[in-house]
Length: 87
Image (tube, rainbow, N blue to C red; front, side):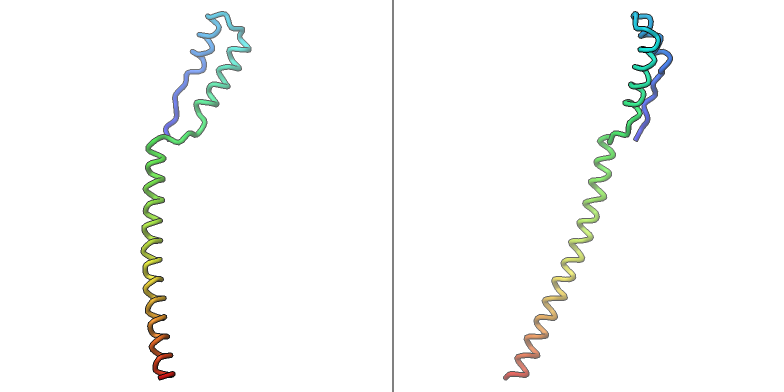
């Protein structure tokens, strides 16, 4: 995630020129700086996460297919053994 560059001094000076007292201008500047520097997911971050999740699901789907075949094979073997025993 990219950081936003924010000139707090220029912001404070702009507020003071508009008639805002110095302490309020500095407080607003700090509050805005915190908001701008907060970690927010961008579209590319979300897309990257989506690709990772899709890859994991594809891997799990392959593993489930393997387990399904193994269960089917074991069931077929068990049925054939029981058929041989009782026939």
